[in-house]
Image (cartoon, rainbow, N blue to C red; front, side, top):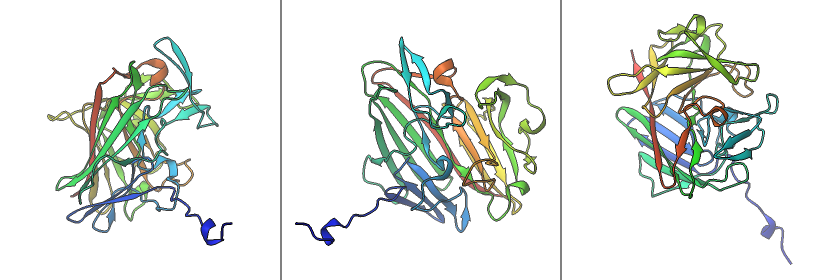
Length: 313
């Protein structure tokens, strides 16, 4: 016979175990679910929009997007002679959104330190994605900000299709998004259909030309860019500048060939409170088109790095 006390259950947090990193006046909180960057602040200034530990991450906030970022039409694709179906997770557009691990718990791969943690998960082979791919994500704070390193490993015996993205919502601080400017280093805009699936690319003009800082007032974006502009170190940059003269500078290495920007106008839980700036290795529907798709050979690794820092003008 069991007592009422024996039947008490602890409700798990929607974001899972929390890993708090500190370096100087920087604090980052990485949630186990989705290996999500739940908080990142410098002093009292939020760099990303935080969400509560007891809240389901709104709009994939801070999450790892793998083994594909963005949208996959109908959740249906072919690869190496096989045809595969994954669940539809954007039912209004009949797309599968942002991969398979955005709400999967990750566990520490090793003992965390004060300023770094590596979290890991392995995609269990399933009917829609029958490849065991291990994903290790390291968040590390240093004097130059936050660096995020992802290493994907194919543990299987056949090549696996793979893509990667991240989904931080950058904070405007105490200002509104309309008061901010955004600069993005990329030379081609991706055109889309009514399902936000790519139809081609075009030269930059109007609100899509972000090569120089553009005020975001009245600009509604959920768009991708290709042909990233790179500096001498091979990094491509995005910069969100707020009226207080501070800039959130975001960089991505040569593994990332695309950016996505969303102002969240139509996104529940966001509604233009922040700007999603998402580094991606490929754009939407890459599992169907093959464009920029990584073919991860058995035993092979794919590594990608991006980072954030808060700059003072």
